[in-house]
Length: 173
Image (tube, rainbow, N blue to C red; front, side, top):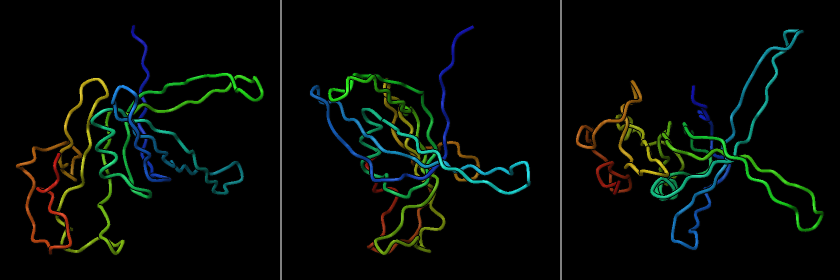
């Protein structure tokens, strides 16, 4: 039997992604997602907790994240856990950081307009899917809202939009 290291999360971005390039020219995006959970304690009182998870995306996926991800956006993330360790220069203590290395991302909400509200004219458009792998990049495609399965770009219905809105066919990926 093989080992398995797979993570699936749904949450909201806590900050805008930080996009950088390595010395070899590889693009990397870093951001965090807040995942909420609720439960009832032994007395039946509802309890809430938030888990903040650091996410890292590489290559084409990182470029897509830089283009469409913003603080507050709701997203589905699939990837693997990776823990790195180092020695703190000041204290000499061993430090650890666990992150999710993203392999697939799907935006679950619609992009707000410049005024920060969702436009009524875009109600029939589909959310954006950014599916890519750090090893073998794929391209992001619009996604069918009913079953969350990616569809070909040509299958996306067009809607009338005013000139301040983005037409999904104008997105370069």
